[in-house]
Amino acid sequence: MSTPETRQAETRQAEPRQAPASLLQQARSLLIRTMTFYRDDPRTAGWLRERLERLDHPLRIAVTGRVKSGKSTLINALVGQQLAPSDAEERTHVTTVYQYGPEPRITVHTPHGATQNVPVTALDISTIRNLQRWRPDEVSRLVIEAPFPGLQAITLLETPGVSSSAVTETGRSALAQILSEADGVIYLTRYPHQTDLRFLESMHELRITRRAPINTILAISRADEAGSGGGDSVPAADKTARRYRDDPRVRTFAQYVLPVAGLLGQGAAELTTDEVAALTELARLDSRQLEELLLSADRFANNTFPETVPTETRLRLLERLGRFGVERAVGLVSEGTRELKKLRSALLDESRLNELHEAVYQQFVERQEALRARSVLMAVDMVLRANPRSGAQQLNGEFEHLLSNSHEWDELRLLSALRSGQVRFDKQDRESAERLLGAHGNQRQSRLGCTSDASEATLADAASSALTHWRELAANPMHDRLHHEATRTVLRSCERLIARQVQS
Image (tube, rainbow, N blue to C red):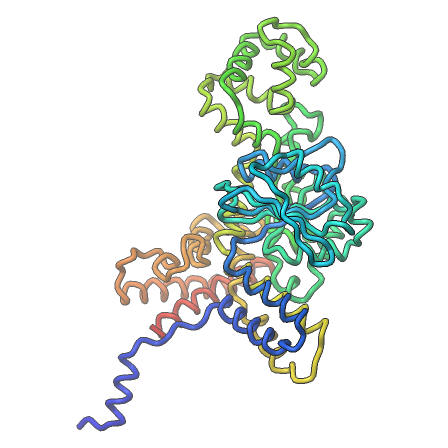
């Protein structure tokens, strides 16, 4: 016979259980409680409110690195438009934020908190260049708004170069503070020096950054100038990237290490029909003549042979593509790639910019919730450490709990390690691991490799099979520490899938 108690129990069982809050949701709640706790401190509460409001805006990615490492050129290549000024000398003294806006707009922020709008009807490179030359104690940052599709998903922050005069004046801690405001970091260097590695390590000194080193891409920039600057330049930069990718010290803070030729990537998108015609004329030369012509940039620019390609056209090709790009473009035309669209695409591949785009998408955009949670918890940690108060024990306890139960970060770190080759499984296990870690979507069906209309019984069988397989791999005594931790992370993802199924 049914009693009120049994009917109530049956009702509770029939009701769908609420899914557990994601890491970002929990981090956001903690941020709000911390903001409320410090409500009598307007400066701290206002700073926390800014971090809360950023959750409704595109992901923030800092582009930083050595002086003259090609930051502006890379920003232009990523955006797909000429936006950031690039010069032969160091010009960027002020942090510049490039973000999406329906109309062109420039806002100047001073160190004292004042703002001033610079009237513009179009974004002029020379105007931005002149503003970037102001001293950091006069202008704290520029905000450039532009209606470019490349800025709809991400906001880019360009900082003064490491070891630049601006950093010397403001201090490295100030630059590290700027980078702490970014959700992701692309660090550029032509060749990693101790200065680069020490700076990158300094960015990961906070306990949360040590716990979640998931937001850094190290780019070997100006790869088309590596070595002799000729056809072997990008392959030489690729060897450098592979060497540092396998360096245990670098693995502690960088998830991707890859070469990129920003100038070629930007120039490929802007290549014109007339320039393709000039490259076609050059491709008609025999191999010996062409080799002599491309021995150096000066020889290529100043030679009068062939007469069908005038000096101004050669200079424009060098400015747009660089010596490596001209050599590869002529080679591609010789091989039959003469249609403008196809040549642009092939040169874009040569620049490795597509690989950087893919890394940014996979590491930053696709898993932005994990990165945003990291940024939120970093803000909470910074406030609790800088402004300790009695009564903050509960906030500290919640922070520590989230820090120790942030499996999303472990998943993201392992995914990047699998994609970069730092962790290697056989083909079948790698595909299984990437899927279970959420590489193809965060839904249970996607993680388990099932169709969207799969039944609960099918999902249960797939989850059980995955759990058994990865439990066996995790128990393998032949694995080294790195691969043992990797299998444990995938196993934990399987266990969470089982738990989600029970809750549903």
